[in-house]
Image (cartoon, rainbow, N blue to C red; front, side, top):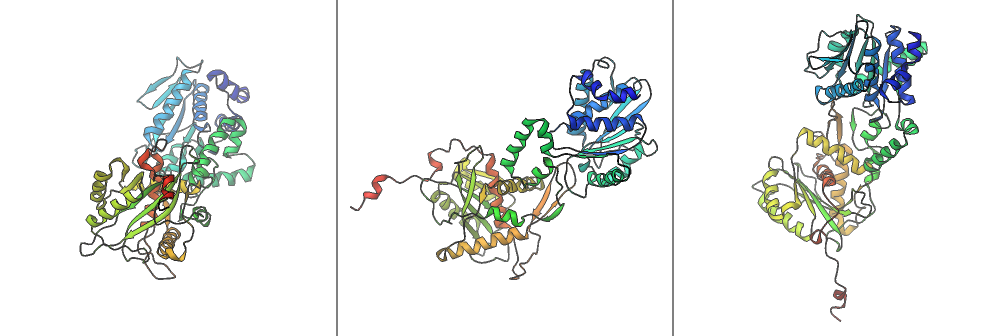
Length: 498
């Protein structure tokens, strides 16, 4: 057995043709040692995304199946979902087994989720809240993948008992997320044990440690940072292995500072520039007329329009957006609103207009689409689409690709007041990250929130309208076409009148 312990990594390399990286090898040795010596230790492995965590799992599983093939051994692998996570894990194991010279003709598959080599078996299970997995037993190894996405209650009730009476080794794998996850809880417990006996139980690696062995990985992360920003929650957690808060204020002072630009506001377009619009639609009041409320704080949500200039100078391939103008309408018939927005779209020669097509906004969006064609991009809000919008909006800000205009002059006092409302909405915006593998975020200004200084209600219409600009990242920009840019002046225009 001692020889097997010494040769665990050479065995994996010989059997599968894959050489483990140093940070993978350290984990492999520790886990196999605990399994072979029946130490029953609990390990926590936090690797950056795409750094070889799942490949290491498959290599360990194949090795242990081979090592214990002559004696009874039960291994259980739990993933947050059946599809795609558990099925992907099974596919990876099959690939390793088929490349293993010792067992490629010996392994069998039963019941669609059990793999067997001799007397050793591994069962793949789903740890989703609705999965019925009570009764499975792990006497050799209990492996919990993406533990940050498995509910603590589900683990304590249905998964932990699998190894309770067998003193099996447990490994919790995942990427950093929030401090209230199963992964974070188990890491804290493992660190306590590690400090007491000096046996390493926790591996929390950042992208720098991976890039030291895989330079291409460093280039990949640098690209993600350039696209999303270093402080984007997904960059911090997925690549730098930094935990984030599960709830709180979404727009930190640092994020607000990134959003403040130096370019001037505009009341009319500038020739030679490209512009886009984003429209968040509120309900209408059939008794009200066409009201433009640039300077007031309405008691109800308004229809909010954000106009931004598109900068393709650093197109690689995502553009930057500079907010230059806003409008608010309260209690407006959508028929009248349609006429004014259509006029503005023509005046600004907009390339694209993202429109809120949810509920009452569907009709207005439909009329605009008929008039403007493919320039109109309907956006329907749901829990998933708003979550995706929140993440993409943060990527715009954190990467420096979205900036608001500078404070306005006295002549543009109304735009200055509406800008103040926008930043008030940002400062009152809260978020809460939902449990589960979807990484969904609920965000917005809580209902009935009031500005402590003025006592006025704080809405999030301007905030949502600005966020909708991030939808444009998925649009083609390389061939804008002549109709997308405000036409440059004719040189002869300057001679007229002489």
